[in-house]
Length: 99
Image (cartoon, rainbow, N blue to C red):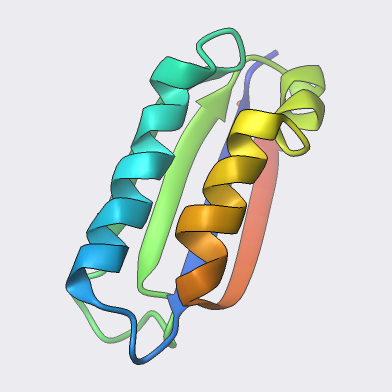
């Protein structure tokens, strides 16, 4: 059964537009780089101020709970986390549920 994986990112105040664009592009590329795990993915920024600082959202569907368990520690995913996300990240939260 597919699972929806939603991640909200609160970015550092000094995160540059280029760094944010890079992070978003790298997150989207995970679908193509891990097609056996990720079914679909979108990355967007909130256009309202109700996000309490969590302004960027990754909304993705993974193949299964097992795929989600493989995705998180996967070296390709971890490379994105370490090099594109963590340098500009202030806080993060995730929600995962069966589709």
